[in-house]
Amino acid sequence: RSIRSRTPGSRGSSRPNRAPVKMVKPTIVDARAHMLGRLASVVARQLLEGQQIVVVRCEMINISGSHYRNRLKFMEYLRKRMNTNPSRGPYHFRAPSRMFYRVVRGMIPHKTARGQAALGRLKVFDGIPHPYDKLKRVVVPDALKVTRIKPGRATCVLGKLASSVGWQHAELIESLEAKRKARSDAFYQKKKAADAIRAKAIKEVDA
Image 1 (cartoon, helix red, strand yellow):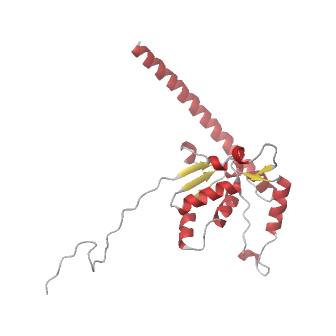
Image 2 (cartoon, one colour; image 1 turned 180 degrees about the vertical axis):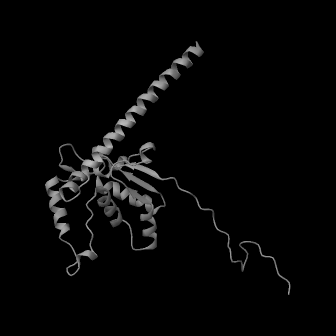
Image 3 (spheres, one colour; image 1 turned 30 degrees about the vertical axis):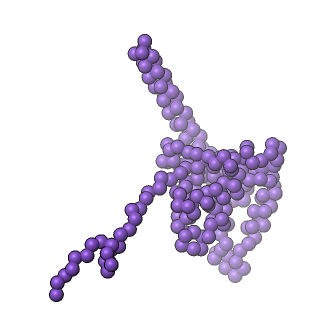
């Protein structure tokens, strides 16, 4: 019996043709001064469309309403638990990054394979850890506080709310951010001096 050669992708082949996997470059979003719900809706839509997103500085996200009002709502949420075995959930995240993750999760069909894959493309952080401190960060204009909230309206910061309900790492994040800003300023001053020397050299050559 002769053995017929089969080309990849032909009928009966065990290895069909597949489209090459396209690597998507992650987008780093600086969440400072963004409104919680509006930023989460944009992030959720992009995740479902296949984009990889990294959200940093979640502790600087803003929420509409006073701190007192939002704390009352969160304390009411803390009362929700399983009556017989609270360790089975619901789990009340205290870190600002996990609070934001939970809001995004509520906007995604996370119990389906598509939703789980979308959530797998999301990373959230308090502060700006390495290596994202050296990468370009973007903002979402439609979710900025300055474009969505009238001046004088009451708002609160997610990091402060988290600290009032049990988050214990606000001082640590603040100290790490101070060190990061010092390094960033030193790099900028060095780059600024180098650019000035380069511009002066170009001017002398042209002259």
